[in-house]
Length: 467
Image (cartoon, rainbow, N blue to C red):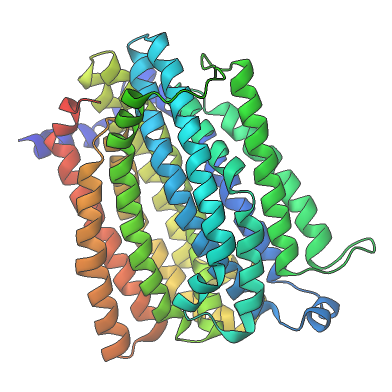
């Protein structure tokens, strides 16, 4: 009955109340823009190193394919660190949203204080791990020799800014939970401008500056995110969007436990996924530098296609948390369904362009014919799976906003370790399908994840979660 009622309501969402539609759209649109700008930080690096000048190639001793591989491998480690920051951010969003819905100012202040303290601690640990563990991490991934040194330097430089990066991600999560998605958008706009300017100057060497290649892209990313994190910290110290950070080094044990209870399953979920992904990436790197570069390009383009899902998931988390804080589960459900309708439509349309015009997308980032040819089929597969990704992202955003983070953890274990990895071994190692086999396994994982997340959403059990 629950599943049937949800499907019926989703089918009639085109006649949703204007207030709900407008509320979701106004909150989600800046969040989509923020996600786009956050993605563009990495995409700018990929574009610049994917188009190294002949002079830079001669000076640096590696070509664009090796540079793309280095940045792609370096970003694998960055995502591992981001997982830790996101875990704190998920707890921060859920708790702040509940406090906003309940108009509980004291709890809001406690969440801001404790979540930013945790961000600093986690950022320090990630920074030390990134600087001193880069080489071991790359050996684990079987990084190609021609990319190893550049990837190591990329990791170490970006890791140096992990503390302010953690403050940036947790700070924006707090603001979104309070219903402010515009400020994170503006902050990310500044970060992108700084990253593009610095990276453009340093990758190929402009105005007499040295051509640093991959290292130049890393410097741009680190400086831009570092400055953004410091700016956001200053904003919260002054007070913004009803949130204010009070300088206090005392640990709030009760709030820390609440943040951990919500955020820890997300951290475990993502660490499980990332650890499996490291094994998964080994199958790709074993195909050679060109195949890995093609894989990385397809992943980069795909990251654009699911930005509406991420943005609507963020908006959904905030609205669901606020509605549950106000003890109105029906409003929470209506907001989630409207987000699913709007975000799903956007992702499906973007996915269609990836299926119909894959080569046009790929040529935006790289001009190497071998890489272009290898990336076409993976990109088409990514386009076809967009509706499933929309369901997964937005339903999981609803669950996390409600504080229901254990279900995503268990479902991630199932889809990644029980399905994706064994299927990859079958398709790549036994059947020899190469990169297309890798993507077939990945798309199967995404589809199953969507089914499981929709099942949990339909159960309505997330409406009874206590945070």
